Image (cartoon, rainbow, N blue to C red; front, side, top):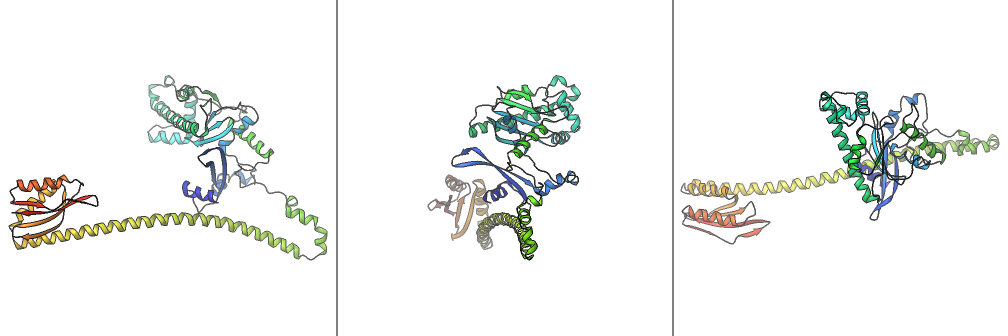
Amino acid sequence: VTSELKMYDEIGLDSSKIYKISYITKEASVGDMKLVESFAVDKNALLEKYRQPLQKVKYIDFLAIPFLIFETLYTHNILEKKNDLFISIDADEAFFAFYKDGSYITSKKTLSLSDMVKEAENKNIITSIEALKETLLKKGLLQENYTPQEYDIYDYIQTTFKNFLSKTYNIALHNRNVYGFTKIERIFFSLDNQTIPGFEQMAQSFFEEATCLALNFLAHEKTLALDAITTSYILDKLTSHDQSQNFTILEKKAPFYKSEVGKFMLASAASIMILSSYPLYQQFQLNNINSENKTLNEQLAVLTRTSSKLKKEQKKLEKSIHSKKLEQAKIDSDLHKLQSVASSLLALKSKDSKYTTMLLTINQLLKKYKLSVENVHQVADGAMDFEIYSKEQKRDTIAQFMNALLSAGYQSVTSNEIKLNDDVYKSIITVKK
């Protein structure tokens, strides 16, 4: 449950949905933590994807994770165990997977043909999935295969595959550190069981010592390699009764007579005929309770995830509200200071116009040296106190401001100690005309 909650919090799974979740525990670790890779499939999305086939076939015995299927190539000694990179690109799905000594390490999804078509259209390059596939298989990444009129599509393909291999290379570097292998020895590529012209040269510019091969193992005339490999992988799992990575939610239920309840009822048929029907009623009730309990547990899991997500959002909101309150308090404090200064200035202006020139001069110099006023007081006839502070946290700007006032012809410009308070330099300056 803890692992599932972590997936909802960190990966962003929708807490209102029900997922089929599986885990792979890696042999590698980081510090004291064991590496675990998790997979989640939306059950409703799964039902929707197979909606049409399920109208004819009611059950699916095994749904495999594509990244894991290459294990079967090593199990049956079709491939020698090395450090391999598998790349598969199809119309609607594309991915690459790393294997070390025949064991799965990690994988990533990448651009499918349909994704590439959409990207190309955004660059005003009009093509289709079939046309793009044909271009890749016949012309590939070799510029000499394209006419000048086709350089736009060539440039897009060249850039896309270069970015793809760069990303793959960076992940390979990360895997070296985590899983402890030195280099990629083989790259298996498949687009309709084939590689594309120029791919090997580009791949070897990133993986210098790797051999590039077509991923066409187990494939026949009209069979895609990926389908054949998947079939072999599933057969291995079913034979060994390994359901740990089976993502189906549509498995065929065992016949009634093979179920534990069925065996019990058949074995007890004679006694049931003689005894009252109450035990049967109890068993019926027990089945109903178990079914309800399973439904309630699923609902509880959804509510637990939703509650965790809401608590997390609540903490964020509370933190934001606290921050806004602090900002409001500062604004209120600054406003109060401005109102106090404004009131003092208005009082001086109404009292005696002779301060107007002084205030204008001081205002200009405050702007010049990026200083601010907190309070203004008249201390004597023709003399005023200005409590100022440095906006830029520089002590010398206050001294420069005082020298400028003396240069402007004021009789006396003095200050008390220039103090550092809350990372801001402050002082009270007395100016006399």
